[in-house]
Amino acid sequence: FELEATPPVDGGDYNDPWVAFDTQIANDHGFTTRSGVLAGPDGKLYYMHANTAELVALEPDLPVRDEYFERWEQSSPNDQSTTDTDPDTPGKQPAHSGLAGAPGAEGVRDNQLADAARAAVKGGAKFVWAFGQCFGAGFFDELNALGGTQAMSSAAQHYQVSRYPEPPADGNGIDWIKAYLKALVAGGSVALPLADASARNDPWGPNPTPDPPRVNETGGSEQPVYHETIPAAGAIDLADGGDERFAVIWAGGALRQIDVEEVIDAVDRLIVGLGFARDRIFVFIDDGRISAEHPLSRLPARQIRKPNRIGLENLFTQLNAVRNRCKLPPLVLFLAVGHGFNTDPRCGGDRPRDGGGSYEPADGLDGDYGSGDDLSYGDIEPWCPREDSSNEPALPQGIRRW
Image (cartoon, rainbow, N blue to C red; front, side):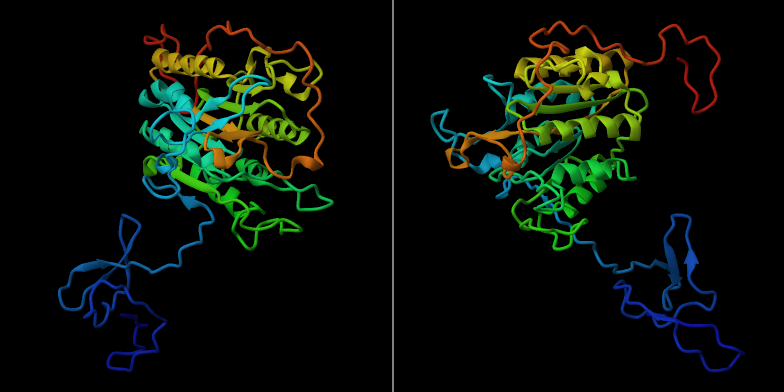
């Protein structure tokens, strides 16, 4: 139909249409009412159907913004559970992606991570998962099976290695993780826009025009992937959640300095940009100890932990205890940097991200600041409302008791 301008005088000719628009609703619109388009209380625009006199909503056929991540789908080729090549288990068993652990220690497989998070997810905790290591999308099938409210993104498919950034002398200095962190405090702290920004500006991804532009990077070297268990998960805002927001950063071992720099950048952005409390950020790195002068020592020592399965299970148990005590499900960001592995022999086992030869091994990780092998972390003290506050007067909205 056509939105027609009001005629200048009764009986005069109509002015030329201002805009022609196909609603794709009815084929006999004829004309709109002289009163023009009506704005409804639901925010939609309506016109009066010429023949039925019913209000019909305009449905603009707006161009869809290109997505440069691939949406994960169960039982599709990007679902690792369809890959029956695990050499460690007889019969046809799916391959597993994993997070590389502490030096000389076993890492954490995707099914083990899902088992560790199960109680918290089932209890209502909201999770934003970001896997920057190799084979990251291989975690999606196990995490998706938990249900709940989860948004997950990865730098690469379950069968792909991910890439380090090329140094500024040879490239634009950005990789998927850096693109993710850059968006984290640029008004993009919501799960789906974060996934969009990291995929859009990943110079190793498929976007022909990342920001900043490529230098020597090869587009399409990795394919970012995104999934949300329910639509509401894509709207999780890491800037929300009050005090009960947690960040878990998994770095693993055998790190290069660029890995550690990305961990430091993540901690800085979470504290300064999003207001995360220091004692709500947990870093699983190397053997769980760093030097007292290391930039990560701004976190309490108990927050520096050894990257192994037992330590991770212990932390998720603590997070679930916070939920049980506060009756308020926490919001959790899980960010993986460093190295990944895949049990499919075609993937080569443990794999650091490609392109790391330009970076020196990490330093500053030799020291005694941190938890190390000690698993007696103590409970996380929740900041939920005090149990004896039921008879106290209500505070104005937006004000809380300390």
